[in-house]
Image 1 (cartoon, rainbow, N blue to C red):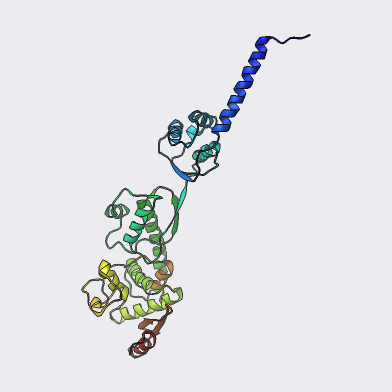
Image 2: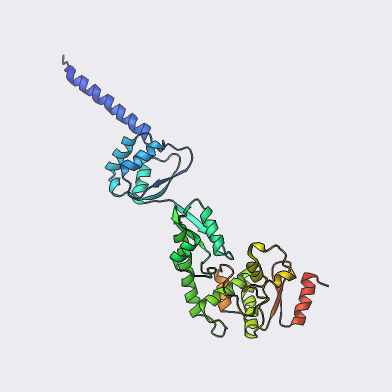
Length: 327
């Protein structure tokens, strides 16, 4: 009868226990410990050990040793990418280490809508938790290289950035996009229009943007303004008065508002205002540079948001009576 040596039996027993402990360790440490989605920042210059320490302190992982050991096996320390990462329930430690090794950072979607001022954009971004803010408005404008008047130089669009991006970089991207689109459209413009610079095109586009939301009407509105500029008539557009009044504006506009002495008040001053009154979308910018062909010099808003156009003041008065019910 063969009898196994007691030493070998003991060694195998110890090995079995250690294997079970290892399995238990892996099983209890393999998952991220979050019940709801969280955002975790891997700071620039951090080591895997520092990441593990912060995760442990925040009770996001059960074992620092398991995290660092697995990271070394995956060679993650040399590939670690800084940024913000999304931690979801049921995410494994293995998956998270893979994310921070590949730089699969969290993204944020920023939508800048048409017809808003740059101050509106700055305030919007300052309140956005996915965007960082370390500089004042004036510092950012100076850094980007935009001089007064600031409005109109930022293109409204939906942008995708890394979570934690700075306001400066968001507005820089918007500004660069506007310059690119403006440069192309300016080269392709109707050369007969009385505009002397690309920024004047932005100014005119901002008036169009604020007069109508209907793309098919924008070349018609543009034609009216171009016709008035050619005849040295005042543009007389309400949005410029509202812009001039700023925080003092209280609807509806009154006769005294229209007499407000301000460079942007196109009821008092001839020609374009000195700057844009808002951001402009592509359709408004295109319309400013490609007005419709026609002789209309007047328009009045209808109840449905569209406009009635007229080439003479007498026709315009009829439209006013018809659509505004003025006796």
